[in-house]
Every structure is written in C-alpha cells, then in structure tokens.
Length: 385
Image 1 (spheres, helix red, strand yellow):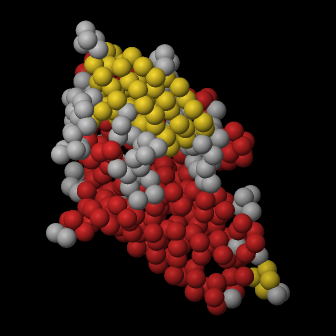
Image 2 (tube, helix red, strand yellow; image 1 turned 30 degrees about the vertical axis):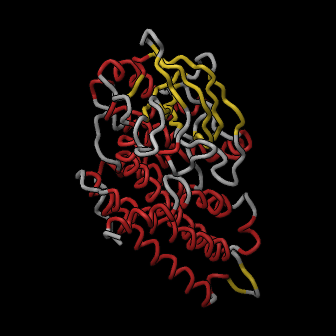
Image 3 (cartoon, helix red, strand yellow; image 1 turned 180 degrees about the vertical axis):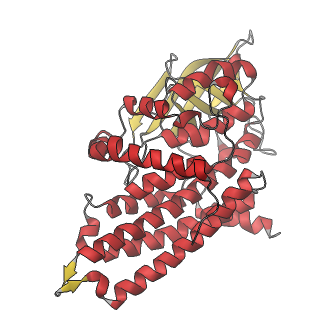
C-alpha cells in the first residue's frame, strides 16, 4: 500500500543510507559478525553522515529534527539489506531521549557535541542479573559521599547493549534505601565515564542473534561519580524510564515490521531463482499462498507502525499504544520470518543467506524493551482489567 508517513526529505535520507550500506557495510559485515561489533571507526563514519545529530537541537550542532521517522528509515534500510549498525541504535534511539529530556544545560553543552561526532558513544544500563523487566527490583547502589561531591557506585549490570565500546553509560542505581511499600522510589540515573576507576567491563556476551551489537556485563566497585553527572532529579529514575519506554517500544515495533518486510523480499527473490522438480519454487501454489499471507501480515504491520509514528510525532502515542504496536508487530514478524525461512529450505538455515540472520536477530524483539507478556499486562491495564 502507498505510504504517506514519510516526506521527500525522509526519502532523500533513505537513498543516502541505502547507498552508504551497500558501500560501507555489506562488503565487511561478515567481519563485524566475527568480531562481535563494528570497528569504532564505523561510528565516526555514521557521525560524518550526520546520523547521530538528526534529533539534536541546532544549538548543540545537530539538525534539530523531531519525532522518530528518520530513525525508522534507518531501521527499514538496515533490515532491507539484512545488516545492522551495531549498537548505534541504542546511542541515538535509547540514550539520546534521556539526554535531551533530562540533562541540564551544562550537561548538554558537555556531552552533546561529542555525542554527535561519535567521540562519546553511549549506552544505558538498567538490567541486572536478578531483575530483568522488574526495574523496581534494581539493587545497584549509589551512596552520596559525606562531603556531597560525588556518589559511590556499587553493583552489576547485564545485557548492556553497546557496553563494550561505550564511553558514557547511563546507569540506573538506587540512591536511597529500598522501600517495600514503594519499590519504585529511590532510583536515580548516573552518567558514568567508563574510564572511571572501579568501572569494569566483564564478559562480552555471545548471543544467538544481533551478532554485530556488542552486549556486555558491567561491574562497579566503589566508582566515584560526580554529583554533576546525576541526570535529572535524584529518585525520579523510574518515572523517567517509564516515559522513555514509549519510544523504545516504538523502535522495536518498527524493527519488527522492517524485518518482516525484508524477509518477504528475500524469500520472493529466492523462490523465483530456486528450482526443484524442474520448476521454480515460486510456481508452486503453496509458495504463492504462503507469500500472499506474509505480505498481508506485513501490510497490516506497516499500517500500525505508520499510525504509531504519526502519533509519536504529535506527542500522542500512549504507553498502551506503544505496547500494542510492539506486541503485534513482534509476534507477527516471528511468524512471517519463520515462514519465509521455510521457503528457503535447507539454505534458510545457512548463515550466508540473510534470512538466517533475520531469523536469529528477530527473536529478541519479543523479549527486550519488555517481554510480550509484559506488553499484554500493560494493554490489559489500559482496558481496566
């Protein structure tokens, strides 16, 4: 179906990104997968392209665009090519909203120029070995020093995307004692310089998918964090996290749609070329029916994602809206990608075929940003249940 969510500027950006991917990513992507992340120099290239500054206000060196549509174009184009830009999506899609919304003027002046240039790569550390989606259960602590100049950070985080190469990590920690009567209270966000004494990057975790996105364990042993690096107000982190989860879940919804659309395209190309029993696989009725079903699912996902993008642009996308978009697109994408892999036969299980990468990468969409079960709980609450 014809889309109206993007304008000419978005499409010009799409053409630029598509050309960039074909020249700078596809030829070396296999090496990135083996290394577990792109080289740091690649992030500098993205910065030179202006990718990191799209949504940063002009006074800090950015383009000053609002909304999420340019990020959505990036997701669609990387999925279309069966590649990713490593952990850069966390840098721009997850961390930037926190800096724009909650950093004070001094912090913005200090961090945003380096954020745009790629000199300061960022990550956000919420998840702990024992918490998962239960952010209120965070046990990492940050105690204010007696002279009030710094916090002393202790604890551990896991599943931190971008954690290996990051220069600045937004760490969610408990700055006041745990209160069973109000588990969400007492959490704060500290912006931690990864060169700080006591800050340690542990294992780089090996995942079944998203192989070019470095994911790490982090540990903090008496790390001193200046009070000037507290993001927003002390004790307000839970409300900050809830607010920004809307964009995070929108991003995952877009990714789900983009991967499903790419899977259909890869399957369509394959069945036209592959011959069995003397004819192209595309000529079998089962193939036609499967792809017809998959294309219809993709069109439905597209309609939902486009509406969500418009609502977000207008500041009207609710927590429940984002949960519905994430739940539907990620569950539907899993079914579509699986069917498209099946059409590849044995070759669909071979990693040199993009469909295999999409299959592995797609699986986490139903887990991170809140599991499908968490999304159902949110939607049920919106129904008054």
